[in-house]
Image (tube, rainbow, N blue to C red):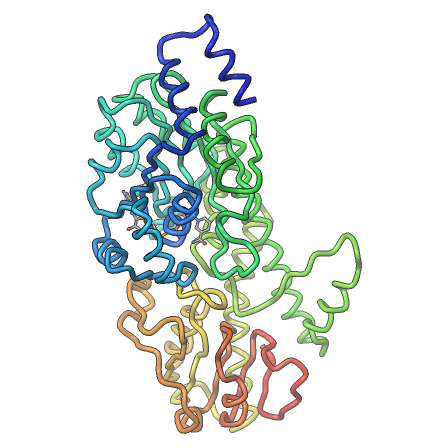
Length: 461
Ligand SMILES: NC(=O)c1ccc[n+]([C@@H]2O[C@H](COP(=O)([O-])OP(=O)(O)OC[C@H]3O[C@@H](n4cnc5c(N)ncnc54)[C@H](O)[C@@H]3O)[C@@H](O)[C@H]2O)c1
């Protein structure tokens, strides 16, 4: 398709701006296109690495000078990119990193935006970062040649058409002619040992056929397959669909956990047996809630978007409620364990939370249920600490949690013996669970770390 379009364009039926499309297409084909990645976080840095490894010159920009300085010193700050990989990128002379947006955008042929899309305090989509990035591009791109602009940040359907394109139009002209635009949702899964940025298929939706072909050509040289969809809105919705599916299903299995516990049935055994069905069942696993920057956040985007049309998703509403319920359930199981083992309550009890990241083997605690549980235990008068080999200190957590500045304790036999209860929230690899088992008075296990261990001091949560 790309080649056909190229052939069409090379014929006599072209129009002004064709030369921009043709030269961009050529540059993508022979990898001489220079790519600016805006936002070097959990998504942007692995993407910059994948682009760099596949032969492109990449300008990584981020306003956070501590991230930029860290990369300049060849140090990664996210667990899925190793220090030696940052070193390789810099040594290849194909990776440049800075806080200078203007220069990087001006000098690039493609700009890919990977900025945060969190929720505001009122739990509405916080589009500040996307707006800022679009404005930065609009300001810096003027007079710099034809560009392809791609948004990868998760967002609600309509963002590209209603927010992004009108900003760029002001200084960049007509999309599909003077510049090109696509939406390609990020599908990064930090900590996943099987799939990495360059092995996950990409879905692309674009403003027009030209933009679609350019974006598909770029990603086609980096990932195993590119799925072209018919519109921006479809691509925006694909991302929400994927994460709403996970949100609802994890919430469902958490609800089943709470129900089966009342029935005296082990949910983990149920899941293991149900998973033997070769069709029609896909296992999801329970825990202490749902966290991260995406799964609990993205469904709220859709709910926000449809509210103005008088609609709501019953499934999303129920899943949000269940996420809160399961955190309370885990707190309740700690209280139950203390009462059952020692006849005491939460107030004044010393509790160690093991694992505060939102999932195993990552150093990301955004929206982590473990932090909410930490706060809930604190509010009930418990003396709470945490151990997490991935998170030395809690910084930039939500103010209302009052946890900023709290540091991970050192895990030792003596420390464990000093605690009334140990609550396993996030099951990182490499933690000495045997030492925990042998030295703790009470363990509350929300992740089935002690599967098949029938010790008297374990309470399943
Ligand atoms: N983390 C994930 O696993 C994941 C997975 C899929 C999708 N996403 C989505 O990808 C997007 C990025 O998420 P993330 O986890 O990488 O966030 P992040 O906070 O780790 O990184 C975003 C980076 O963007 C930078 N930034 C902010 N404003 C900027 C600007 N105007 N220009 C350039 N950089 C700017 C920030 O300083 C930060 O370093 C979000 O929309 C998120 O929902 C994340």
